[in-house]
Length: 371
Image (cartoon, rainbow, N blue to C red):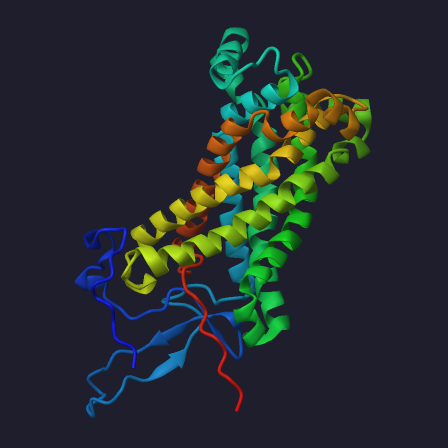
């Protein structure tokens, strides 16, 4: 018989996550493996009511989500996840436009933009404060479209692959499901992002090309045609697919480990604000890994979208292999860590707002052994 280990030391003080008496409830905010819904079905354990006079064991029954306003895995559920993706990706990428602007210019013109601090100095001197947000419009539109596809389709593919695998294998190979679901979603999300990414990079890195999206898009099309908008799609896949696979799989794993090893109170008993803090922390850590994995392809995307007719071979010849992996990396780690943490925080805050559970944090129980 298992005995609770009350002597175990945890990393976070009790008062930060202890739920108040008024919010005390026995909800499982995430999901468990069941025969009907693989990784993603939630459970609710009812407390004894006045009508249950026999004082027996509380009844257990299955519902889609705690106090839900939206039915899990319904069209409305995926629409809510899509809306959360628009907010989390569009707003955060637009907010870090100054960092992205310096990073892209460091990749394209390292002799002029030698460091982070000098890069900001050059921009301020040449373009003023307004120059820090150059390219914000294609950033907002492009990453809003990408976030919509990425988050909404990730939830869809996660459930879809879980159902194909069945409850036993969905529990055993959950990380592979996270990887497959995120990769599938990102392939489509990058098709939505690519045109705006091309305009953004050209506006940000070619002085005098255009003021922004309104004049940059028609000028780009006249110069390179509509096909040119997708010139950077393959390297964009090379950057974004590994990034997104790392983003989702590492986030789910990190959050699960935090609740398992750092926080003694079960997730369902933690306050919503604390859960959102865990989402941000898990997202930030995941973002560091994302930046490292996807950085070489990010350098290629910036190089290819900066000049007409540029090739991957030209980029490698100019940057060198070492430069391909390291140029602009410290800034990108700072940017992507903050960005990814904020994205998961906003996304889960929106899910909580519409009555859905936050992402991750519960290890699915193994499927029952067959007799």
